[in-house]
Amino acid sequence: MTVHPVNFLQIGLLTLTLFGLVLIWRQREYRMLQVLLGLVTVSMLFNLFEEVGNFRQYYLVTPIFLLGVGPAIYLTIRQLTGTGPTLASAGHFLPMLMALPFTQYTQWVIAAGTLSRVLYALLSVRLILRFHQQLQARRSDAEDLSLNWLAWLIGAFTLLGLLDLLRLNLQPYISMQTNLLGQTAGTTITLLLFAILIYQAVQYISQVQFLHSEPPVELAPESASSADTEAYQVIFQSLGEQLASQHWYRQPRLSLSQLSQLSGLQTRDISRAVNICTGLNFNDYINGLRIEEVRQAIAANPQQNLLTLALQAGFNAKSSFNTAFKKHLGITPSQYKTSLKS
Image (cartoon, rainbow, N blue to C red; front, side, top):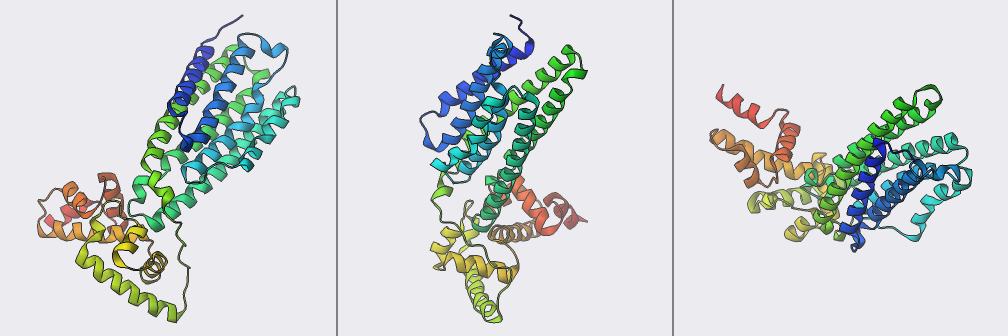
C-alpha cells in the first residue's frame, strides 16, 4: 500500500463534503447541493480505495463520476434559481450509470466526462444569465442577488477539468512524479473551490428564500404599437409622479411586485411602461432615480459622505452604488465629486 500527499488532500475533500452534508442534511431547499456533495463524497471514497487499497486491479469506478459532476452542478443552480428537482431530473445521471460497464476504456470515459462538464457548464451559465435577466426585471437590488460568484466557480471547475484531461492523456509521456504533482495541484484547487461553493450556496439560499414566492415577470416586448406607446406613457407618467412624491425607490429591497402594490398598477404594466418609455429594465430605472437623488445631494453639498447618501437613497452596499453610478453617469462617484470642485 502506497500513500501519496494527494491522498491526504482527497481525505480533506472527503471530510469537507461530509461536513457540508451534515450542515444541510435536513433542509429540502438544499436537496441538489446534497446530491452534488454526496457524489463528490462517493467519488473520493472510490479514489482512496483504488489508489491506496489497490481496488483498481479488480474494477475501476472513478472515471464515471466525471459524467455526474456536471449535471449535479447544473441541477444545483436550477434549485438556487428557484426550480426544484423532479423525478425527471434523475435522467441527467443516466450517462454516468451507463458508463459503469465501460470503465476499462478509461480515456474514452474521461473524454466523455470532460465533454459533459463543458456542456453542462454552458447550460449553467445560460441559466445564470436568464436568472439575472429576471432579477433585473423585477428587483431593485439585483446586483446584490446576482450569481456572478457562481459563474466564476463554473469557469474554474471547467478549466480544471480540461487541464486534468490533458494530464491524464499525457500520462504515458510524463514521469510518475510529474503526474502526481499535477493530480495534487488539481485536488488542492478542487478542495478550495468546493469550500467556496458550500459556503456561498448556503449563504445565498438563506438570503433569497423570498424570491421563490414572487411571481415570474413577463419581460417587456422589444417594440410596441403607437397606441400601446401612448397608453404606457400615461402609466409611466403616473408611476413617475408617485415615485417623485412618495420616494418608494428609497426602499433597499424594492421589488416590482411591491411597487405594484404601492402604486396600484399591474406589474406587467409597470414593466412594459418603464421599458417602452425609457428603454431600461426595472432595476436600472429604480437605480437611476436613486443616482439622481445622490447626484443632486452631492451638487448641493459636496462635503457629504457618499456612502451615507447612497444608503439613504436606497442602495444596500457601496459596491452596488458604485456600479450603478458609473453605469448611469459614466464616471465614479468620487470622480463626479472631484469634477464639482474643479
